[in-house]
Length: 251
Ligand code: OAD
Image 1 (cartoon, rainbow, N blue to C red):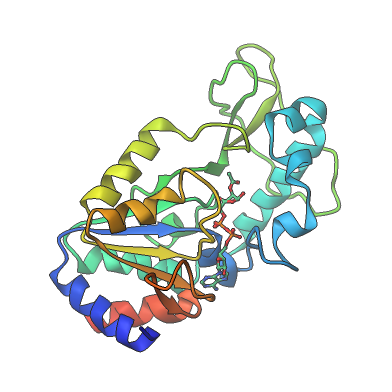
Image 2 (image 1 turned 135 degrees about the vertical axis):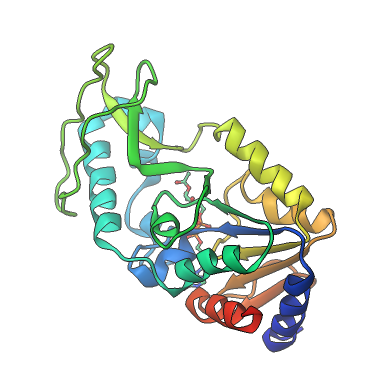
């Protein structure tokens, strides 16, 4: 099916939808200047080694390196603006009776575009917690850290004096249970799902589109590359192109 045929059918399904679930990955924030992870030249994992930055062992070995890297990423997000795709997600929630927004992203661009109650499966850069006792950290977080900073001592926990870590999910860690349950239950319940700008590489989040398909939803990828197998449907192109078009068609 080509993208225009999928688009027309998606508009039809959305008009009749009882529950739309929107599942987003790094691609939705690409036009805001936030790097994805797996783009072969610009992706974060093409330029940085996740084993040195995104595991509990990496933090235990060099907390100042890890804290500097996440503080730099927080700085980039704070300086970025939501794009037309983020804005369109918020507008879809105004056009339709029931919309659940689920993201793997650790930025807050969906919220800043107006989405409420975004389910964050991989945590967020705007909060932090203790590496030792896990309690939330309530102090201010650095928002002015440049890419060349490779050492920044993390603050200390006000309760146990442990080191403060970013509140994100690292490789080898489980996802927050409540958020995962909410996401899986939305996938089972929705009649339309849009899976936007994700490579579907990281489990269990990557189960979400498959689960929606298995439960009978009209599941559509929006991605610059065709996604999945021949039976998968992709609106091929930029999220900032397709999402505003969907909103306009529903308006
Ligand atoms: P990836 O970098 O793996 O995939 C980004 C996807 O976005 C790719 O499929 C691109 O083709 C697509 N894309 C890029 N620009 C786009 C655009 N303008 N419009 C539409 N699509 C676009 O990022 P994720 O799938 O989000 O986990 O990665 C999943 C997880 O892997 C992340 O949450 C992170 C990472 O390791 C953790 O940090 C726990």
